[in-house]
Length: 215
Image 1 (cartoon, rainbow, N blue to C red):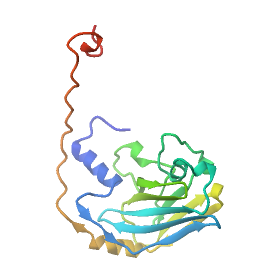
Image 2: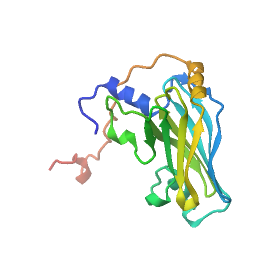
Image 3: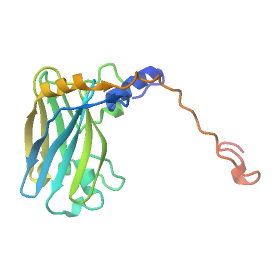
Image 4: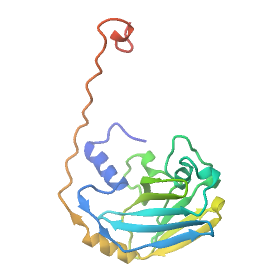
């Protein structure tokens, strides 16, 4: 839960944990892998970009044939993005997880952002931008912090599309090495106090002339 006692600095630090920094240029790790596939479905990982405090990647979902549940934004909802007209059941969703060599785990089943800032949120995987159609979806994820020494394991399960739980090992050393090549563009900007918009103008007379809560 968000606390009213949080300082702007604490909120800024939390945003840095839950999204890629906008003051850095990432470095490519050169990693890609097929996480799981059937004759009609394939899920892959590509575009690993590494920052000083984490990395992001694209989850590429491809279908050979459209299915009724993938139309009109349904496929994007199944992959993990929120869609106003789709609330897929757990057994239909694509599940994605990350595990580090030290035992740290995170998955798309739990959105850490809803917990609000904490002293040690641990390993986080956060869905960011994504899009697609009835046959393809490209969904970006942000993972932080950077992995410790050892491999990075990506766990995928999508039983309703014929893909059982799979484990794919990525080269954690390549991710850490890419972090050294990321470039700081400028220091983090100090947090700014949010500005409230001016109230909407009201008619001079009539019911709408009075603010809510007045008589």
